[in-house]
Length: 383
Image 1 (tube, rainbow, N blue to C red):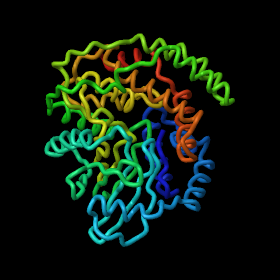
Image 2: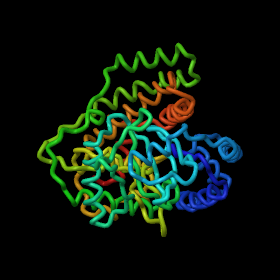
Image 3: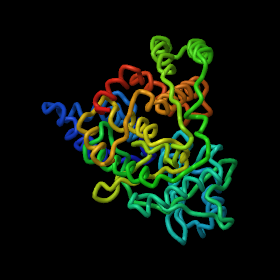
Image 4: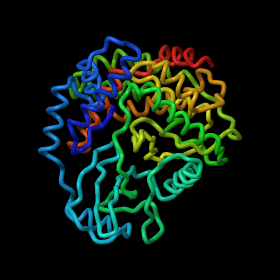
């Protein structure tokens, strides 16, 4: 689901709804603005447009404050200069909250990252990002600390910092053909780099849970009385069926891939330029496996979007042969994300994580990945 920023603007959301209306009318010309507004509200995890407006008002009135000393400690750790204004919240993500930090040397975006994103992992992402930028892919400029590191620990969390960029939101789904074409172009440029790698694929996109773990998850949801427990029980057979779709990978075909170039990790810049914000998930994959993952994110949500698919393919260029096994990484990543979101919704770390995870849990149940959906997408691909 899309994430509302901590200081949202209802005027900007109205513009998003109008942009989404144009995309929806490509498939259904009689779509009304009210329907587009409801669809946008659903993308933000609320039931309708009035509820979205109410959530905007709530967030504006109750913007979170930074922990004491956070901005100063970040500035010192990354050599940003002297803090000249109170840090402002930007948004909460699965990794934590991002902050807008202003110093006498400029303006910066400070981002919390998962514990497994070490400096070594960030360096891998920086290597791919720098090569991609040289080929015309837009991305923020990362900041190195005085120690030369991209990741520093501040207040018991891992952080990275970017130079501030004035950007819009991530694209609303379904994406327009123009945005899909730009996404396809970015993937095409990244794959054309073909940076060789001997690093094994990340276990998160390879390892699949045994059926017993899903049974335990269902029982935990039932024990705490989650209202969506019956829906989880009903969809589990389809998810277990997904796990029978496997992929065999030739290590010689692995290249360095962004691994998470999804709509929520890009922003629209000036003239709708697509800016790839996230590089810390960079790892080994084959072009076909990353394309399989990309298609489930860019042209399959909330339903298969043939015009966006055609535009994505046009932007990408020479298209590899795809089959059902090409979705192997997409399946593993999606199932692990669904499991983690449901776990967090059952037993959240804190209030912020609770709200985020509950939305994500409902989202994966509302729009589950299934074999039938992947087969339909493969048919639309013509591969």
